[in-house]
Image (cartoon, rainbow, N blue to C red; front, side):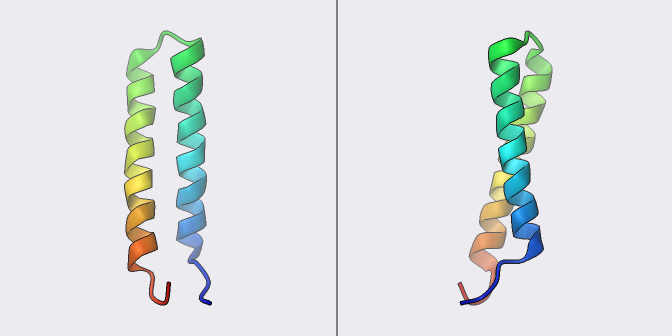
Length: 59
């Protein structure tokens, strides 16, 4: 079984952080532009995480 690269764990943390930030801004704030920016950053992080996952050798 191969190890996942450190980048994978970093991207996973970013997905979780941006998810929590987006949830918080959606429920407890009126800053719609900031919510949209955090959601877009989360989407970019998730697409990057999928790319790294499917291009890692040996999985």
